[in-house]
Image (cartoon, rainbow, N blue to C red; front, side, top):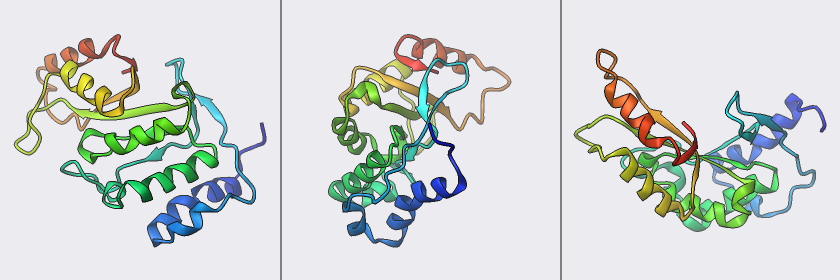
Length: 181
């Protein structure tokens, strides 16, 4: 595997810059020099992931994000550009509204070649009512139309440090449903 240099990092990140400037049509062309993003161990989890992940929820809030507001067809162009450049790690979150869009990314490659991460809330908030963790994960799996999720992050853990029982309960419910908690 070739050394991953600053130049390759910048080349790989060009897809995101193109999206930010609104020049999506240039993404449809095949890359002149496809970059192979290297695969690394994710700590001690046993998962192997691409060094770069594709975020699917810039300014995500209220089940929408910049990426989902582009519409599905433009979203798929961006995902395809990432896949062509070797990205196989997708970062989503329930609040981004990106799960139905991300399921399209999963359809573009064999599922076992991809790493899917999502983030969930474990606190009951007025703008995001709490759902039992196992029910939430089942709903998310159905939104993705996948048998499993690779990584689930417990997002914005800001309360519960005096009594972390809700955190322990969330982790207990996730064990066996996802690859890594």
